[in-house]
Image 1: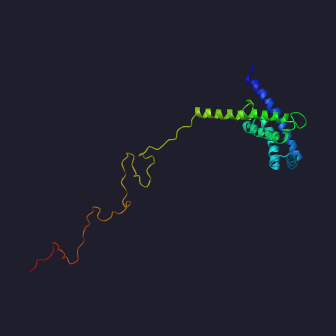
Image 2: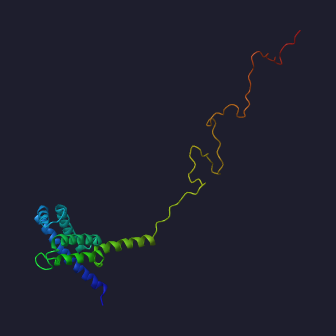
Image 3: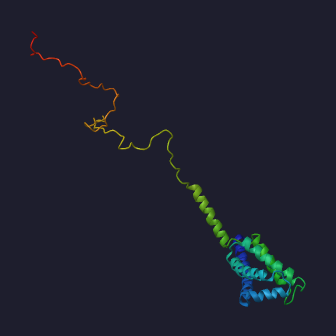
Length: 214
């Protein structure tokens, strides 16, 4: 009976084997140069030979490394499968299954890439480690939610009175009287009755020691 650890170990071995094959073929294209690879593709009838050479070189080189590490397997597997499908369609389809330029290697690599794209890479991958980390982070966030933010109650004044407007109070809480002259002058008509002075033309009243008229 297949156990999960054994399956993960076998999947790791398969990824490393296929990844090394892709890595070596990509490195050969780098050593030959993109221009030489493009010229070889053009001789075999590959359309857009320059773009196909760049795509094939870097997909095989970087894709082999990603397969070994188990990073981005769904995308990497799909890109490598398309690379092998193009190689079979434009180069190897009419050259038999076996032989120096047969299609057997291309078909095996295409099938393995498709399996890895479908999720057969096992758990010993960088993808799985990142997934476990994200899941544990989400669980910790759910178990320990941040404290809710305090909100001001409508209609309540939480700000202390300004020193310029708050009255001074004594020890018993009674407002202290303002010192003379500290307040602003009251405008006329605020309730005070002004004392009128002597009007022009008034006759002064004589004092008690005035003489009687003869």
